[in-house]
Length: 372
Length: 97
Image (cartoon, rainbow over all chains, first blue to last red; front, side, top):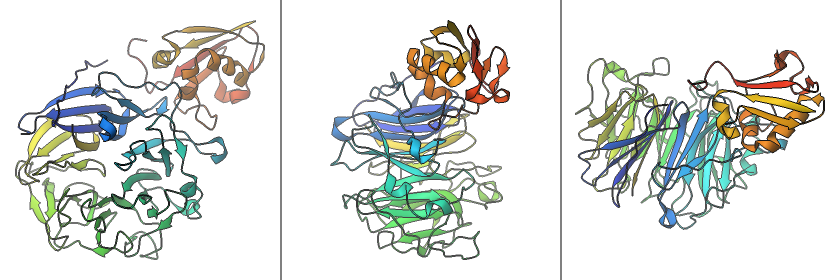
């Protein structure tokens, strides 16, 4: 087995959680973010599509969802930054027998609201939402979504039929938004009992009806925490903003080299600022022109400005996947992303300049940022 | 009569690092023999079977050398004194095994 090392973060340190196709890594830096050190690899050989940091109720808990090719996916957590991990005897996220389904992948782990520190959610493949009301000790299928009449008509995208995005509304207690490839976005206002599709204005390039009620291949959704009516959406072809909490969506692909891409992240304090990484097309899922550039809007999508300072600008045919972009809540905020070629980049100035933290990690599928 | 389970490769970590696990089970279908193994090594079950009760695609099970894919799956007859091998497929496993 590979040699393992750990980091020992202190209060206010910055964390980057990195999930890869061959395990997980934890990076830390002090608040100045000039020098980073890394811990891992954790779960070597397992694909880790989902990671999360849970700081509620005084925790310092990292969640990870290693998926072992032979033994399946499981949720594990550590309260000491990776030195010890929970080892569930039984799979903790699993479909009830009556569902007739079997878990393929855990795509997302999301802590619930700050004032409900026992709530935790995870999104999985086949597309379903699981909830825990005891801080992850036990999990149950959210039946309201599983039994939605649209579900039989959801279709798998390139990554499978997965629920990959969970957005916890910062103001409305029982509102949760999820996104499914390929199903679109759905929202509940009663904690999960009832769900409705909210895809008005979002294009489905691959369907005869380009604007159906559901069936869009939504790649990622991000909600402003300071202005929760404002959301951004990166679609499989299409870049959108909503100013009515996701009820309707407006095209904001203004001046970007492509409106195809996977991740989108919103600024922690400025609802007009968001970041994307456009890719050439769904047929060539690499950065256009062999240049790795982050695009930022500071005017809610009216325009987008590229930033490549510190990023490779020649022969860089990179791919940044849907969960491989994250921002922290520092001021100025840190922006972090990883590539399918195993490069990890960080910016301490909101994306103006970039530093390569790692080159040669396994393919990166998840990047999460946190402050200890 | 004892039935011997032989646990290979990385699957051993879920059986307390044991390779051989003998269970007192009568002849019958494989699913019945496995129930004895789950009782002895509970962490092995969810690593071998999905929640639907299907054998995971990258786990191989052999009863007296026969791959159960071709002998009836979990209904495969297990005679007294059988050896049942649980083997993570060639797609992975411990380098030391």
